[in-house]
Length: 114
Length: 115
Image (cartoon, each protein chain N blue to C red):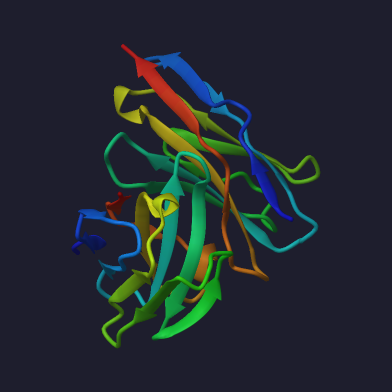
């Protein structure tokens, strides 16, 4: 079975600081995709970043970047210059190219303090 | 472009009833996926439709079903509701070529409460 583990249920950070959310996954597949989604309180879930496993270069979207360690099956999200609007639940997800069925982690609740 | 819309936003039903939820994808998107989100089980994939065909299905009982229309709008139905079906049901749309491997855009969800 494929699993995604987010070991930090809650995290907090001061505005303008950097925070890293961890995610590990388990699969025997080689063709897969990794995602970080953000779900703000009472608002829609949005895609933060997407990584294709065959690409060695880490994906980056503005202040958001990932550290993808394929051998270690680790996919952490770094948020630089944290803003109050970054307060949200963050979900790590994993989809294989074979099953197309996504598996989500339990989420990390991030609070950004002013 | 308008985003993904879901109706109704809130729904209260009693055990044994059935319910139909609706999802309108972003214009031009042909793939629609459904997810169930609960505090206990987290986010779980229900199924994905593409061009009116169910392309992938998660591990849910047959009480959960769906369909997609020619305009890509999708509905999901839950029959014989149980208390454990209380959840936020999310719909997501995508261009469709890669299913859930593609970028997906989520709707606001339908909050279903079963009494």
